[in-house]
Length: 472
Image (cartoon, rainbow, N blue to C red):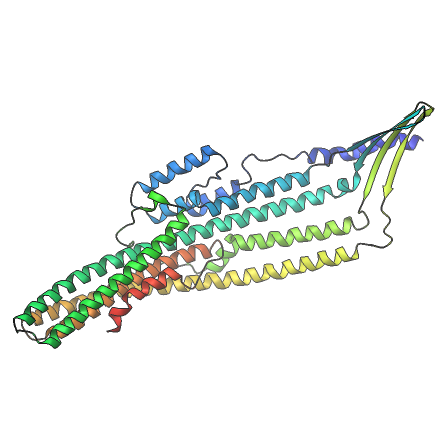
């Protein structure tokens, strides 16, 4: 009897540290702080989770401020982080994960039962108090497991946020390039239109043959076709950017710059880029966290292998026909049929699976950052070659041909052929500059997360704009 009398006190002393540790509370910001820090560190942008009407009003005001002037790449990224509803939905996942972590860190509520029985004039009242000791034993490991899972969710959402920023930058450069290409094609069409009108008058005066007029009209028709292609690409790339920015209605009439940013004087030189990526990539860190969490799960499975249900209860029964009864009830599940070996095998399989996936993530990350850097350097070299050689050469040839044409040393057909070559050179220059800035965005993303390499649909459609001119 003395042993049983001391048992509640001993259990209380044993559980006191765990009870204090289990009094976890919510952060109040939905666990968004690490994601906000990543946005500030990698993008220099702010991030807000819209959970109230006040938050939405604040976001709308900030978006209006950004839309008041021509959009820049940084402004587009900031707008996407605030206004993209897909990202906002993912930010709410942080609150869910934090709630699960806090819930796993808290002690379960004790149970109390009361039973009132009546047999004739006899009335019996049974009172019971129970507490789940199995949860108490597993609490420290369960809390560590959920904490690591919460950290993995934070990294996952941060990586989604950075990926959205990279895609927004790429969409911005594609949209600006399409606007620039469309403007150039409209200028070419204006020139071709004036040439076609002059050819028509010369033909009517008998100074041009029908063949000469037909060739000039062909150049005009080609210019009209290129304008249509450029406008289609402009609409496509602009709408993609609009979707990423989360804009609609009057907001979609935002203003883009008329030209792409100029090429930097020198490309970035990063000889230790793989080491940098291994230290900073969020997907690599998330894979490591998953391995550690799975290892903790394996340890948890071993600790609770023989403890599926372990409850301690206190009972106090009274009756008006008999003396009061008091005592304790202890129940343990007997591992007669299920010894927990299947759960151990499952945990070990999950652990090795996470190890191999982490290794694959590291291998892929090294390859992706190398590919992104090589793409960036190649895109820089190509854009510089267009800027320093191809376009200036095409302009010099065009200037010389105009002088020769004015001196009647070459025919109008040679002048038209030169005009087509110059159009192709300018188109190629715009596309090369666009590809450089897209490659730069891919490289920035490859240093912090998984990039989407290999080009994009909008870029391909813009590239088709100059195809007609180059083919002739």
